[in-house]
Length: 307
Image 1 (tube, rainbow, N blue to C red):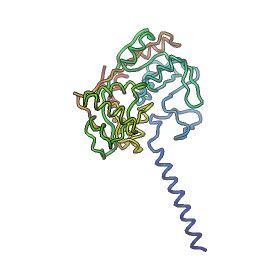
Image 2 (tube, rainbow, N blue to C red):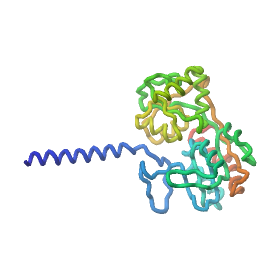
Image 3 (cartoon, one colour):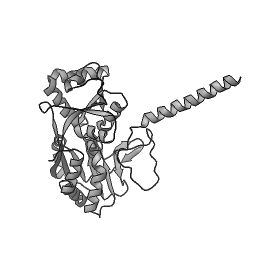
Image 4 (cartoon, one colour):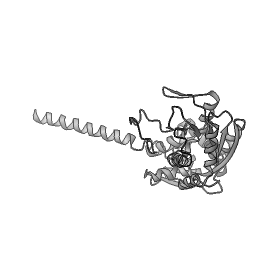
């Protein structure tokens, strides 16, 4: 009887330990990767209540920034430097969702995340050159402030031996791929596929492998691709080089596979001041700030290229 009781006690403890380890493993790479905002009750629950792409003061903001999501890593330092130059702006709200989603939010007037609806209108919109040209009628003024280039994010040690974009067409390689419909980087990557292997490579990755499930189309690649690679759901993901370097900065187990200049694509980062901005002076101040020495130093720190 005692041995049976001991057996079940040990089994119970083992189950609890395994559950605790699994729970720990499940969320160990989860955001927010930025420093959480201080003040108020801290209530971030990994996997349940965690909104890493909304920053700052959603109530009565003095500046509203819609910023393409792959720049999320600069937000903390960028806002601190901006406030240092412009201390009058105490309440700032930033969204770092994909540019295509931000564009739809502007068009429809709101975005719904879970049970929350946000109806704020931006003072400035930050996106790639193509997206800015498509929406040129929205802006009073636009300016270029940074650039970037593509790379491939793989698991630490590169277990699948991925050396190039062409390897992403292999049947044994699970790819995390930004959806070109909503993420501007997806269009750039499709062009890079064609440079690396013609339309055949692009069709293999974007049609055949999507159908068989070995290419996963993301909705928000700057979160999902690192997740999928870190949690062994994908073997590789084409991203901006800054995103791989940032994950390595966090000591997350990923490696960077460089893409040769002959097949690489560069992205340009533009800011547009909105015609219907609720705070036009604040938007203009922020736009001018992005090309200042402090802002450029922050973008350089996080491996973005100068404009």
